[in-house]
Length: 91
Image (tube, rainbow, N blue to C red):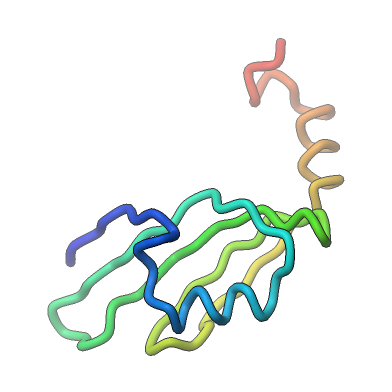
């Protein structure tokens, strides 16, 4: 297995098209491609910040389709940082 970090500009258009169809006002956080010897298509793991919905989203694409999607609201992130400041180096 090979793992490589990518810029959003390096993602295939079928992946970026799906992202822009689902999310409106995004800021990229991270994109990774994983290539497996036993699977023809690579897997893309993408995280982004959606300012329109105020969420952080993590998406996994295989064969050009989303196979996993997870979202956390920014409010939740702020609450966690407030509740556990030491964990985030805020103390």
